[in-house]
Every structure is written in structure tokens, then in C-alpha cells.
Picture (spheres, rainbow, N blue to C red):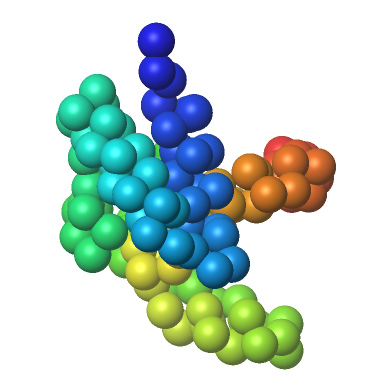
Amino acid sequence: MIYEQDLREAIAECQGKRNPDANTCIKLAAYFTILNNLYPEEKLKADQDPGPEFYQMASGTTPDQVIEYDSGTEFSKMVHGRSESEIMPVMDELMETIKFIHPRLYKSVLNKLH
């Protein structure tokens, strides 16, 4: 059985490759094809916004809530004043990449959020 999480990790590995070649692109296309066929309800194109219900959080926040975070870092300047629905998909992709590349860092971040 091919599991969704395994596919997502393989996709993150390909996307995180420093100098991708044709072989990497072929693998990435294959992984996305398999993911989209085995898990069609999760099917999203990279440039397609899945809509507000996808980002709805248990706390009741709305996806268009404006981020009011300013710590003085370059990152905080980039996200301050932008909507959650704009930033969270980027952060989710980053976390999936970190999960594959540096699992201990990934677990450390999750522990801080817990």
C-alpha cells in the first residue's frame, strides 16, 4: 500500500532538492500523479486556493484573519498584515520539507506549538 504521508515526504524531498534535474522532475510528476489518483479529495494544484473551508481552524478563526505579528525579524515583516490563508499554505509546505530534511527540528517545532 502506498500511503499518503509517504508520498508527501517524497514530494517534499524532490521539492527540497538543491539542483533538481530531469530525473527529479519525473519523480515529482509521478508522486503527484499517484497522490492525486489515490487521494482525490486532497487533490489541489499548487497555484489553486482550496477555499476557506480548507483552512478553517478548530479555534474558530477565519482564513482571512490578518496576522498581527511583528518581532522585528525579516519573517515577521513579511507576514505582518497579511491573511492567514495566504501565509499558512507556505508555512505548511515549509514544515513538510523540514520534516523530511531535518526530522529532529520538525519535532522540536511541533513540541513548541503543543
